[in-house]
Length: 592
Ligand code: ASP
Ligand code: MG
Image 1 (cartoon, rainbow, N blue to C red):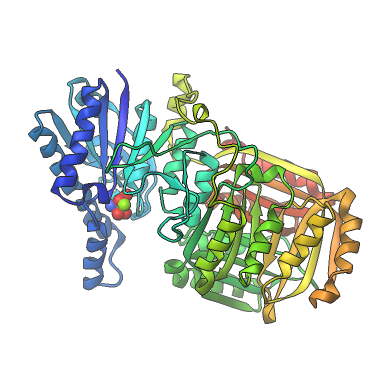
Image 2: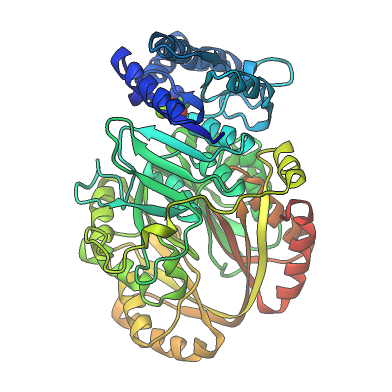
């Protein structure tokens, strides 16, 4: 019998009428011949209210007790949902995370799932019951209640769909799917019928706000097709699947992460091991670092910047200051008034001129860029929070996201069930430690050269002028990093094919006077290394392992840029092979 997991978010169970409406959806699926597992969030804003209550008692509630408190929200809604199903004449059983057997580690408020037992759910399903699982919670080794982080019910739903090998995982929410950007921010946002795991991963973490990013990681890892749809009507939503890239659309979506903070360690000695020292201290506080930007050093000194959520800034600064002291750095700077705007698209990797279009749109809107990072499918810029929405609108229009694309993705490619991991042994071994890191690929590209413009003034339009000229010259740009510099002077580096190095250098030399920046430096041969896989952001460990292995091999990192699915670094051209070998050893245990 087909099995379907249906998840209902807070707004879909906000009051008794909505609970009954959700119950009717589950009953309908049951009548249609499916086994049904519902995953339910806390009603409405109940989790927020609980957080607020705790804050009235103390500003530092013990994390264990926070989980004890927060888990009650879901316990209320699963019980009411079971009653609703009974009232409709069907059988149901509500289960907490502990009763299901969702085992997690002990990182309270951000716990990770380690295993899930399916036995009790299977028995209930075989008895014809609808199973109602409390989202967002689990239990650790010592029977302490844990929660999976805000928005964690999505993760519960996808994880249950994975272990039960469900035929579908429907996420019911208050929006009818994924949009080219958040429609609450930009009314011109457009609904998208299908999006790939990788795009969604980048978008989720970038602040698209539709789904919890770890839930997408699970979905990708276990090939669970997800259907995000509204609980208030029957219109089709958005399918999230391993979708092939759209042929004529470099960018599929734009996102804004509003509440970011930048931390910069200024004047760090430019030698192996510095990044390791910094990020291992931050990771020790269980803080997830978002953008990491390091640019090539000058005079033996480099600046390293990264962003964290604004709420994590205080704790992060303590760790950063410790690291700065240890490294003999000049100091630590920060800015908690920044936001990150990104564009994402699988089509980006193979097209030139995407960078130009992005920076031109921002410049024309008068937006100043503070930092830049790129990956194969994403470009992110950090801007002042006051310009965040204007920046988002500018790039959304700049990529014509408000207009329907001509060659829309064929619907037959986005419906239906993709191939699943069919080998039972493989499934079991993958599930043993559900959230373990999976590395898909470690690669070396030694065909590139690097150019760096120093002294980039803190004003709009410089990146646009540079990448306009570069694109006009027919030069293909790959990795771009703009770092935050001292005295308001940023540094902009990017890589190009070695064959185009000389041409690009000449071109830039002709440009700097006009732009009042410089000097220009470069390296005709760099090695770019990429580690890509699943679980990269939630596993700050990946960045750290990368830095540790290079540091032990005595290799200095020139540039770093990170994204949800990838860590990219560049090192001196002569160290490429050595760096690749050491990374392959360092991640041997995490390879697919
Ligand atoms: N109730 C939890 C929250 O609001 C989990 C969820 O809704 O996904 O964060
Ligand atoms: Mg929620």
